[in-house]
Length: 193
Image (cartoon, rainbow, N blue to C red; front, top):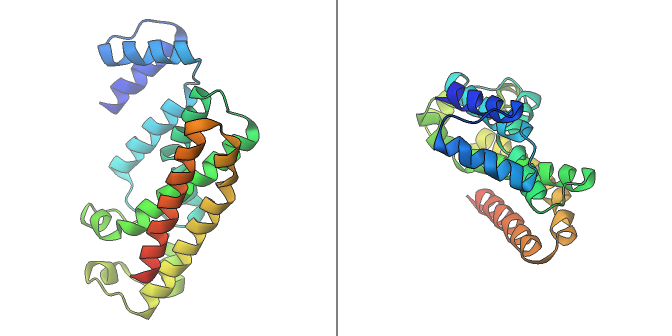
């Protein structure tokens, strides 16, 4: 199915008419708002990766995934609001990656049941946490130290992107502030737990 979506996006890119009603609507939206197609392709790449990859060797590998699974959403929103400057895109990427990490850290158990672990393997080893610890719900000192490290990393990203909320006008700026505050609040709750 994802390959079919990719083929439809390729039709849009070449100016050909999409075959499905869904992508006919996408083509109309892309044309109306002059949206770039690369973020759509990036999202499909991330979705495809989710089908075959369940572990991440290091943080750089996880960041590469976030660049395709989360950051394109922010980029598309900035394009919709005609605010896709290099600085806004950089800040948006920090926010989107931070929010993706927040999601990973709050859903470790859920993801583990799907045979996915987004915690970088090298960092799990450095902090002394094994996959068996996740399965056993072992939340001892090693786990707490690892998760505190991950929570701090996500917080730094969200805070570094926060000036974007003031750079965006009106309601979108307000919504961005609320989204960032929501992510930071979840991190506070993770710290407390």
